[in-house]
Length: 278
Image (cartoon, rainbow, N blue to C red):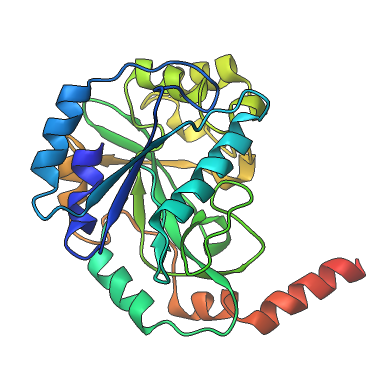
């Protein structure tokens, strides 16, 4: 997936850190297969300007949960990168569709508070011979935003922390579950949410999805059900084809007005006050 996710960000990134467990084990302590020779050959092809730095260390601590190991690794990455600029943490299955625009957005962003800049996910749930099933929000409140960039990298749960979240309009194509059957099985047995889900149940649900029943999938996110309200479908022969589709082919219910409201600190405070009063 690095062959897909690195090229869109390469030219505008000052440096890129690839973080890998030195023992090639997951956050759950399971060994994963690794082709070192192939990996280094790929890096040579992807990194003509020498921007990529490898960070290899022990990121599995047996006394910690998978999610705690994930958070620990993300904070170690931040320390390794250092510096006062924007830290943008991406997973390898997240592909920027307009990184140039996102960079301009960050360069012009001003705030006196500690903030996270969040991006909306376009989440691909399953790939078939004909195309991709993707999570389809029907309104703004159902869009899944993920914290991506911050000037103050201090992570508490995944990439989340207590900083104010500013929602941006720059979408990420998230190849979350759009993988082979073997990859899905390995993913859900090793990711940070391993202890939070019914592994076999989620695998069976993914495997049983088809063009005949996708309309029955409602509120089915494995951790936060309402985060995935429904599924849509788009025809594409592969990920590269999906990325090359005209902007807006996969529409998100984003509006400038709604972004302004959601990014208002006063609106946020009012919502917290109303929740408290209830």
